[in-house]
Length: 106
Image: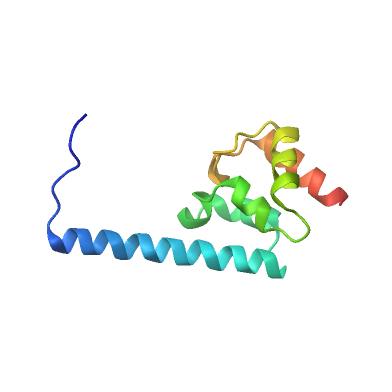
């Protein structure tokens, strides 16, 4: 197995700052979702243009929705045929439509 590339201290610091900024942005998106300031449909639309949103896992986004817990989120994924590791930008059209339809029922 090859070794990771050798980074200078400045490169390592920049990478850590970038990762921290991404984590913070994802946490903010989840908080907005929990508060109802943004909908799942809006996030799906935003995923095409925003890398931070697009790289969020569908499971964690669903778990952040009001009235959706871990079990319900996994059931929604199974219903739509979505893998647990799938990210928002990787959702297919049919998968997205199934999730949106099921979420609008409730």
